Image (tube, rainbow, N blue to C red; front, side, top):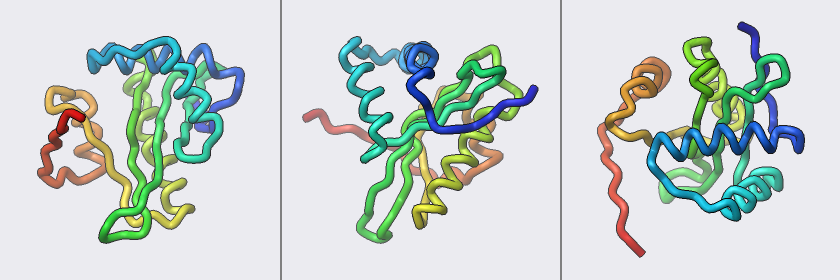
Length: 145
């Protein structure tokens, strides 16, 4: 099936939220309606956070959220924060194409690294990630603030 990767448009709002709600449900993360609105506005502003979407027949079926930041050892890195594909569109290369599109944006911006996290139990995503990237063995911890 053919799909197209592009920046999100105002018309994508409803489908974007449907996909993000699916993503947050998968990770069992509660998000308020106002947080969805804030995030949408942040992504549309493209001042610190960015989003791409994959469309099949003008319907949004996949999303990727990413941001750029400096690190101690590199002037620019790209973090792929969220990646989600509608279950009906999986297995068609959508996630890989979204990763490659984020990689292209990272290269264009001069980033030296593109990285992301996923939960250990996410075997489906990890099968793809093991094909397109290298697992470096890091484990993430979060300190409550």
